[in-house]
Image (tube, rainbow, N blue to C red; front, side, top):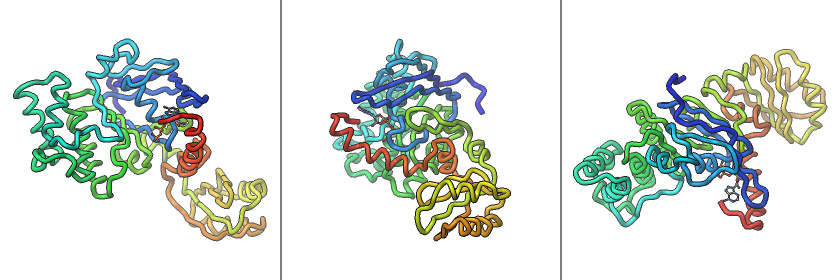
Length: 337
Ligand SMILES: Nc1ncnc2c1ncn2[C@@H]1O[C@H](COP(=O)(O)OP(=O)(O)OP(=O)(O)O)[C@@H](O)[C@H]1O
């Protein structure tokens, strides 16, 4: 863990949108300088709203935040100069070349002459875009465009970089290349990177610390290993042939030796077992005695999904589906994102 002063501090941020949507219900954050911090959560958890407040694009209803030592409400201009923002949607001009985009961005930050040209070339080189620098960006592949987006966020040498879903929409190869690039950036430049993602694997791989966001607040925070380490033993997931009685299943499995944290959701039953492989036959027999037939069972080491399940009380994919179901209602209420 970093011992340097935090690059980002947020205290009790509250933000509601019209229609009584609580986007943030008391968000607290402290992010060490020079670290990669992952804000992980399903769609609608409140990650983008947090980033919008920290990047001065919107104001909280209440609460305070500082970024690179500057108060986001009192000194938004200073915050903006200290940060780079790579939004989900590309900000590059499609009819301009990669180099022109970088030069324009640099000039917007007051960089001029040879200095901005040198910086543009340096970034084209570093993001493996030197050969494509004089081509219009509309012809770039998804991976190239994303690399240019990150380069655009870095032109003015920010202290803190916000990366919103950096690899959404990229194919696996381009995603891996982007991950390597982000890891290199953090390592080489001492940059603080705040990464928002709904990819568990992305957070696990890149972030030194992760905060899991659910319903507008942090439900747990730590290093990926700390979070997974809290979950003892193996995760055993079982799929029942038909929906069972949750109370009866809980009672049947809860008393078994070496079995903890029984969770029943419809046809899915998950438990934590000290030795998963040894526990499976015992679990199957106990379920059979309780009148529940098991169609499939898997044993896995704890993943961030299990951490999410434990702290948010629901599976990541379910939380995403719940938000997807809310969308028509939101649209009907006139809300937009
Ligand atoms: N402009 C808006 N008007 C009304 N409701 C909004 C608006 N922006 C966000 N919300 C709602 O606030 C909540 C938090 O949204 P937010 O975009 O911060 O989540 P997120 O975790 O960033 O999700 P995503 O990964 O989809 O960007 C959601 O319920 C969302 O529908």
